[in-house]
Image (tube, helix red, strand yellow):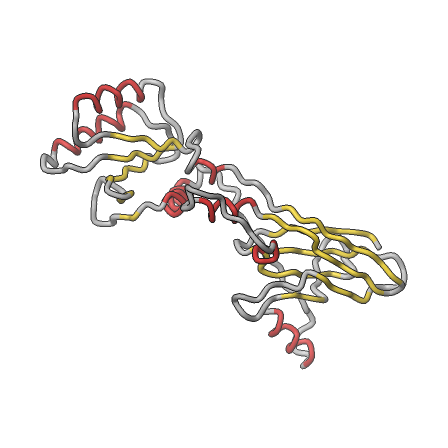
Length: 251
């Protein structure tokens, strides 16, 4: 996009040499339940089964039933599950129930059920408390350490450190034996955008570091021309998942 805009500016085809990225991902899991369920499906790794009228998919060898996030898992939900299994006498797979929360009476009911049933045992993934899968409900923002210094009419910018907890968490999902180590923090950064005269309202991109090849990294060190008078310099760092962080400094 930045290349296209740069060419348009040269040819005087546009008066707006910038673009913005807006990310809306603070989900109200009860109101936006369809979107939230799809997030949970993707995060947990559920294989969707569109042809099954009752179960929502599979997780490993287990059938999966997702309880709508607008209410907790109840005894009525479990009764409906029991009724469905009665219609499937040959079903020998265990059941995984995914829910946002559950009523107190649920655990004793499932305990008794599992004692009486050598097959069709029930396991619950309660997203509010589950240590492995529930963490997608809690968002830890990215953090960056950026040095910005002025020398005459130029500013030197150096990204000294960057961490995206969300990226690291996703990389660690399938690694149970060891934690993933990031040898170069720049590999978590998708691009760097700089505004040399930020007005605290509109971010005008005067410099962008967008690696052309997939395996290339951002430079992380920049020298930008600035106004002779005091100005506000803003640096946007966008990670590989689209989350952005902005550092603003008066120089």
